[in-house]
Amino acid sequence: MLLILFLLYGINNIMFVYVLSFLFKSVGKAQVFTFVFHYFWMCFMPLLSFVLRFFEATRKIEHNILEYIWWCIPGYSFSFALFNLPFYRVYAAIFAWPDVPDAFDFNGGLWELIYLCGTFVLLLLAFIFIEF
Image (cartoon, one colour):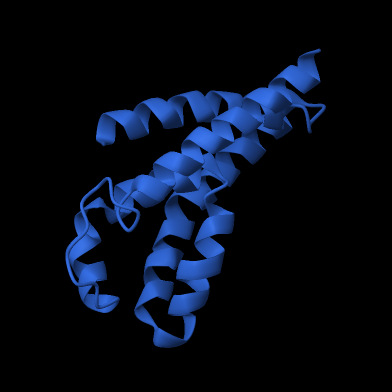
């Protein structure tokens, strides 16, 4: 699981940064924005998602709506999958799942892998559209 995540994230991040760079006229502005963007989505958002899962009032919104939107950012998908690998037993207790998922279950890390593959296809199409 880890090897697949690292390979998919590396490819996605290269494509994501390349496509994102066309939004800026200055190299410095693009670099600073990309650094802050990735720092935010890879450090703070998985923690926020983890915290939102613990509260009953926000659990359904986060788990059923927000995660699907946030997974479109490759950095979030990657860091969320890495962050959640050791917490499957905790989530099984919180969500009252009958069994503990493994890394390749839908409640495990499979959604992150699917989204990383999907964003790669979308970013590749954006790259082709931009270049040609």
